[in-house]
Each structure stands twice: as C-alpha cells, then as structure tokens.
Length: 265
Image (cartoon, rainbow, N blue to C red; front, side, top):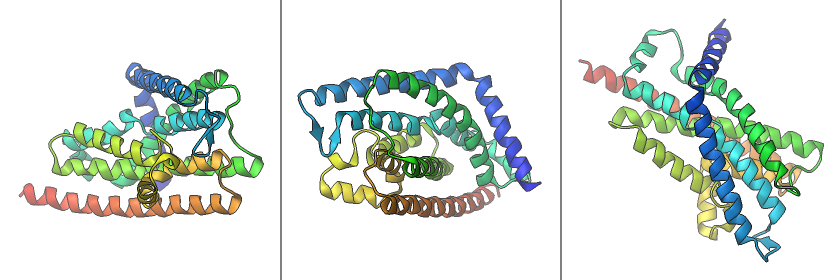
C-alpha cells in the first residue's frame, strides 16, 4: 500500500510531462543542439590528433553521447518542479498529506525520467548514426556494470538536485539556485570536459565530491577504462553518495519545516 501511492505519483508525473509536451520537447531540442555544438568543437580539437589525455576520438564521441543522456535525466523541467513547489507555497499542501516529501519528489522525478530516457535514447541513436566508430561497452559484464552505474548516477543527481532545491526555503528565487547547481555539476561531474583533462589538484577535488558520480563514473565504466573490481568500487562510491545525500536532504527538510513553523507563529 505504501509503495502504491508513490507509484501513482510517478504515473501522474508522466502525465504532467505529456501535458506540457511542447516545453518538454523544446528543452530536449536545446540540449540536443548543445550536443551538436560540443561534437563540432571536440572534432576541431581532435583535428590532426589521435589521442588527448588517454581519450581517442571514438572514445570522445561515446563520451559526448553518454553525457547527453545523463544530463537529459532530471532536466531543468524536473528540477524546477521541486523549486516552484517551495517558492509558490504549494509545499504547504504536502505537509497535510500522508506522504513522505522526499520519497514523493523521488517518485515524481523517476516518473518524468521514463519519458526523458525514451526521448534521450531516440536522440542518442540518431546522433550515433553520425558518430560511426564511437567506442562504447566492452563485453557483457561491462555492459551490466555500465547500466547499473547509469541508473545509480540518476539517484546521485536526484540527491544533488533535491538538496539544492531545498535551499529555496532560504532564498527568494530558485532560478539562480538552479543555474548555480547546473554550473557546478557540469564542471565537476566532467560533463563539460573529462576530469582527465583537469590539473591533478582539481581532479583530486572533483573525485572527492558527489558530482563525479553523475557523469565521470558511468563514462569511465562504459568506455572500458576501469576493470571489474574498479568498476564495482566506483559504483559503491556512487551509492555512498546516494545514501549521504538522502540523509542530508532529510535533515535539511526537517530543519526547513521547523523554520516554517517558527515564522508561521
């Protein structure tokens, strides 16, 4: 019974996404244009070069496709849904419902992810036609580990998005919070530039933070740059961050609710 109500929320989230399908599709088209721009940029960088920091051109093409797929999950459309709920005050209705706020937002995000995943796969497949030779996946076990890390990266990203969205309880605008989160995540996850291209000190800092679990981990496993033991270790680190971010989000929510009670008199 407890699971059913969150399953229903996930279905409602899918229906809401379809209700605003024009905005949803335009958001994806914008991301896809960004992918094409990044592809052309890296193609120019690799002109006359066979390898950069351990990445061949086929590996970089696969890197771009995976990055696009991961960034399309829990997109701006999903993220703004949480911040708007806080900023417009409709979060008060959630306090009256017999639902766990954090679990409910996770269910809604995963529901939207289903449609985001389907459309992302279509666009990635379309792009793959023009990236013949893209290097991805090495063997059955590597494919399974890659899929596990890909699904885990969505949960890591949800944790980051949820914690960031809760900051809106102490701000008057969610727009700046979202863009700050996106800038930091894109840089330190390796979405803009692979972490292998960073100076050693910045690479060390990035590996100590949860953001690398969003892009760098699934890419590293998907490109076969990590063995089985190392892949399992990277996935374990992802889940450590999933748990830590979940606990941090629960603590922030409890704190925020106490603040609401104080200001409400």
